[in-house]
Length: 260
Image 1 (spheres, helix red, strand yellow):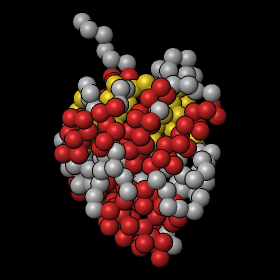
Image 2 (spheres, helix red, strand yellow):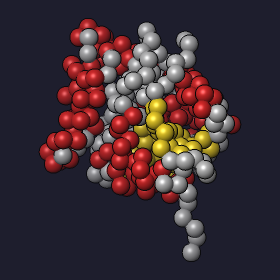
Image 3 (tube, helix red, strand yellow):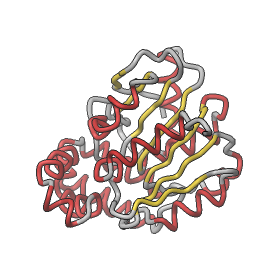
Image 4 (cartoon, rainbow, N blue to C red):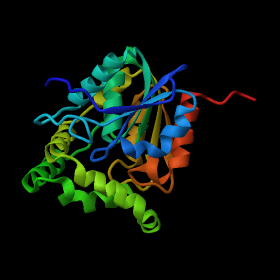
């Protein structure tokens, strides 16, 4: 499939390094709002919408993780960036693993949040794709998805945050959402994890029903030298529910504190 020109936003001056931010299925680049300003203080931060999401083009599907990864490589080439760090959540993390395995010379450091190298059963994703295509909108699955994104307590205490992210799901093009579901159905990056050489941090939410910590541990066990952090009070969108903790983990991974 032909690559697409991803919609993106740039913050920071990039005088030292560049960080790419890739989001979850059914979100736009606005999911990274809590992270951009603090992370851009020391680097250029580029957040983007996956194909079929936000303001990026929506080609006909199905898609594969290879397609989403090649879109990111095209973005790097278009911006004249030879090497960058990458942080991704959920499907964004899957893209990060693909990039680090297939274009290792382009990835400096890697942060993987609430993600998996393999998410069976495939039928769960193809069935969701069929439901969304039939309805003509991901709105039909929004309530079920939101229940996985945030813990019940957080949802009760932060209704505005929940509604903002629910609106992202509903606004995602049906073809883009369904085609990315089909990419997840065929996803299996397990065999390539041992080839990843980028310094890797994996962050999991202890209460994430979509990609629970056992998935994170499998990634850490397979990537040489990878490190795991599990956040106790977090579901799937840990970067939103535990924004401060996740931002600090990312920053410390990219710029380790000096030894006393």
